[in-house]
Length: 400
Image 1 (cartoon, rainbow, N blue to C red):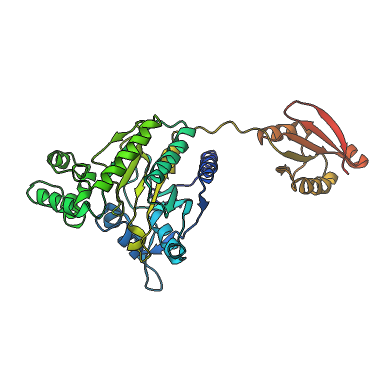
Image 2: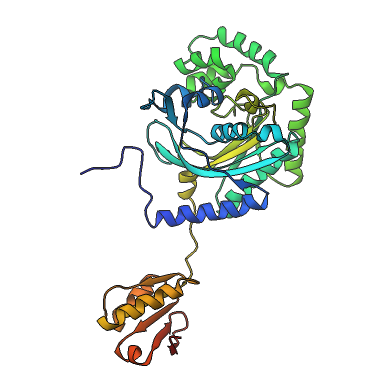
């Protein structure tokens, strides 16, 4: 028997009901903040992710679904959403038009890694990207939007925050950190690889021995330039003013190379080792890195599968009509009336003749508000027998 590939699964009822409910609520919230929907291809040029996500990242180094297609193009299935949105932003010349552009997206992403609770090889993300605003207030705005989404689903979390500095304070800090790392023995292979490509990524290592070795390492928080220091302080001050709890986490560097300045994660204790349910940050250099004009930008993404484990869908209210026939002669009339009713309502029709009792059972099971029936008598008198399944009233109504 053919089966889905390991780490990839079907989304079936009732889980898909949760998925659609999640998308509906997220869309409502982000559109209130002025974001508009964007959709980018699932398949992209591999260079896009090597240049944006970074070759020091685990995603590019180990996890991409990469292959040569029939046209000899080096392509891959997208491992995350931001790079594709930025590529579209530049390709469609939004960077040249200027102004503020805010987008949201959702869809499948792909990473070849060991499947575990809350982590699959095909997974879904809901994300937002904001272009054209450098003000720290937009950082807070983005964080609040992610918080609002998690709050509406009653998800327990802790907000972790850090700043990754800018082109002024990062280069001297990188030199200082590299000097420290060169004097340390015992780092894992990943940290040795990251040390030369993007040393700040060593703080993302989950190896306990590496974490011990990194305790005396210099931290960016002690090496900020004045602008980064002031912006980060203002963000923390505003969050405190709004009674939003947070933890400053100097080890938080996110898993992607393109972040700068603000970085954040929402971490839930209700999950296992993969405990981040949402995360994001500022990436002011990425548009320029992908051949666009310098444009400040910030965004976040939510791991949908992780969130679905923790949300409950409200019981669906009854809605729409169930149409059924009591005799073969009535099937044509039922079909015609069901189709007319679909112009304004959800309608389910039974194609086979059943007893009234069985039609009512089926209508109840399908969550209809009304059960409309045509039998011999109704056909003769051009009427519909209708039962209101909410308040149990019955009536006969002329078809016209």
